[in-house]
Amino acid sequence: MASLRFPFLFSQPQKPPCSTPGNASSRSFSSASAAAAAGGSVVAAAGAIIAITQSPKNPFLEDAMNFLLSNFSPNKNHSSPLWGSVSLADNSAPVTESRTGMSFPSVLKESQQLLGIGLRKKAIFGLKNIDVYAFGVYADDGDVKKCLAQKQGGYSDSELKQKEELRDHLMENDIRMTVRLQIVYGRLSIGSVRNAFEESVGSRLLKFGGYDNKELLHRFTSQFKDDIKIPRGSIIELSRDHDYILHTTIDGKEVGSIQSKLLCRSILDLYIGDESFDQKAKEDVESNLASLLHK
Image 1 (spheres, helix red, strand yellow):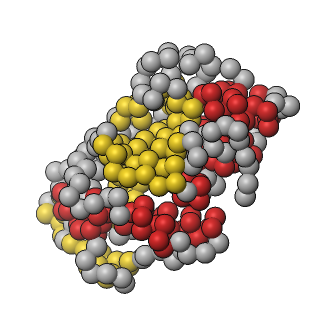
Image 2 (cartoon, helix red, strand yellow; image 1 turned 90 degrees about the vertical axis):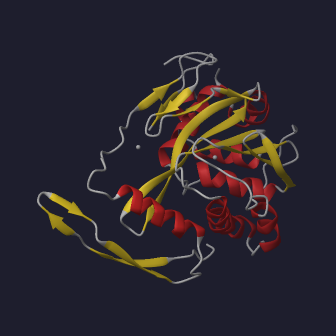
């Protein structure tokens, strides 16, 4: 453990002045798998019969089939990833997500501190979870102190770490934040990313907006155009600036910006909300946010 002038621990397996104001149906598919034929001590998968209840042309399903073909072979080593914890060594030391080996800078954009790292996984036909991307959640040091310290100043450090309100204030207030996604799955297509955001962000827009925001959702997902390539190691950043402007960049190039408090809130909820992609990452953000306020 060491510092950014306060201890951070990441465990593995969301313009001033500030203000604090206030399920879409998922696409599904079913599958039946045909089991395997044996040869000596080697058992190889014979194949899978897939019934798709929605569109027969689905980029994520195509990626999934490629994954199955390349990973379910007799000679493939299917050992499980190691789990552990990662701590920052100093102000500039990067932090590694141990399950994927993806490295995250401890400070982004000169003033945004890394609060937590996590992993987005996706189930394939109910047979196997694949690692899609690792992610890091950052928040601006000065904005956090200005906006949140006055709200939580009466609590002790131990009490702060228990309070979900602190995380809620982080998502609701006009605090500069970035969620940095680093692609792990090498066969991921931009169409799969667009479809996944359509489903996940769409459900949050409905949850927080109370009605179907198709136009806002389309403005966001249309930024992920078909000609964009995202091989393993590609970086997607979703950054909330002052006045609730969401900037989307892919490998350092901005592909769009949208001013919408609802959209910013919905994006952050995917990573640090109550039903976030990685619950441990959410807990780390809560804990490290409390430490940041007492730095």
